[in-house]
Image (cartoon, rainbow, N blue to C red):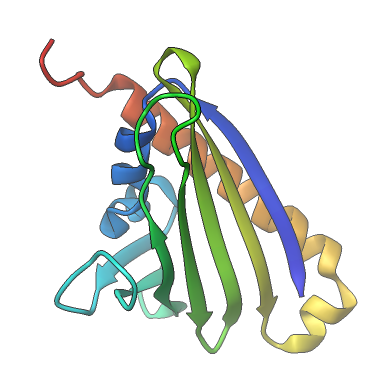
Length: 160
């Protein structure tokens, strides 16, 4: 398995960051060559299932995921319970788990910690070159999280 974490300080409150991260189709706005569709009636909560399609045209792969843990942040203030979402990845190309925490920080900021523990098929790729899978994953998720952060940081604050 390849394991990595990416951490990013976001200049937006935890509730707004959580809302962006669990809007599954929006992930396609941040991850290059990726589109996401929800395949269950509800997009939120335990059991929600969505599929990320990565590639160009017919050349690509599906990454189906099912939410296993769903705990939105309890608030936007430091000390409020952080949010946590875990998903099980069950694809032919990528399987394992992904999770993220959204931790409220002072000044209307939040900390996102994204975790991946995955195997990329063929299995020998991950077994022989875990550092490559880890490095590519870390770079890709850092870029995607930065794109998400830019978007939520620019969003107008309700009531202002």
